[in-house]
Image 1 (cartoon, rainbow, N blue to C red):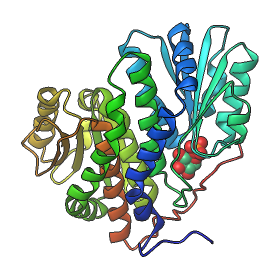
Image 2 (image 1 turned 90 degrees about the horizontal axis):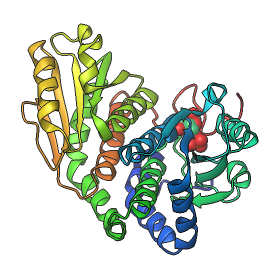
Image 3 (image 1 turned 90 degrees about the vertical axis):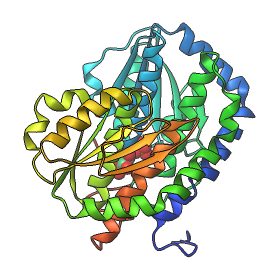
Image 4 (image 1 turned 120 degrees about the horizontal axis):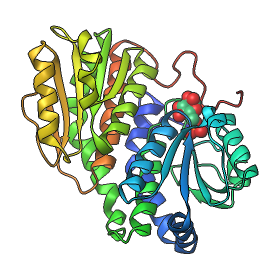
Length: 343
Ligand code: G6P
């Protein structure tokens, strides 16, 4: 291994700490390549449907993007790449393929099928001229640098930053302020390292945990659950917070941990869900940005212009510390590979 941990005990924590730089480099590369951004924006605006495909963590970034687009009235379809056979592409479709490695076979197969049916392809990858990039009509590169830890960290944050940039540019939102986004990421890491360590330690002792969120926080809840499951082997499930009362709540009893992701959009509605869980003895953790929920056993609170970019490293730190406090190596979780090239 030529890569070095540079004094950090693991690549995962080193790479979480590299997230601000990764976001800075990614945004400045987009700003210096506005011609491509403009072309993709036109494609998004003209598309009859935008299909967003990815696997694992990259799928969660895609789900986030699909919510941004559908809130603007676009027909946006998030597609778990390995389920590509359920969707028939057609002319007028734009596919946004998201893949850190650019080599995931499921993503490759999904774009090949949709392309053969008439779709145009935009790829967002972290590896120049990767297989997925080569088969795309438009290529966007995240500038996260190499990621050694098997569980995606800084690359997820840069994916979301890239998608937020594309969205903001396309819909005439304030994209220039994203040039400062790295500061929000840095602040989130610096302010929460103590909290996340304690939460991670606590969750590591549990058999199971729920991650709940509404709206744009749902993909983050899903990513938070995936991350802790991957590296600490704590069973974790994510649900839309309002949906949790339709089944999942039956498991909640004294001490059952529930992590709420609150990006500040719907704190009052989330508070109702917190109360429901509390009433059953649930142990409540809230990760809140800009607006508090209150009522939690532990509330992490941040102010941020870009809630998604601030929450991303926080859920990763929680997973990291959960793994470490169980004595596990978060860089090499069992049964997982960094890049999956079999179907
Ligand atoms: C593997 C990795 C995940 C990753 C997924 C998609 O399953 O273990 O961490 O999210 O592949 O990888 P990609 O390179 O396409 O983003």
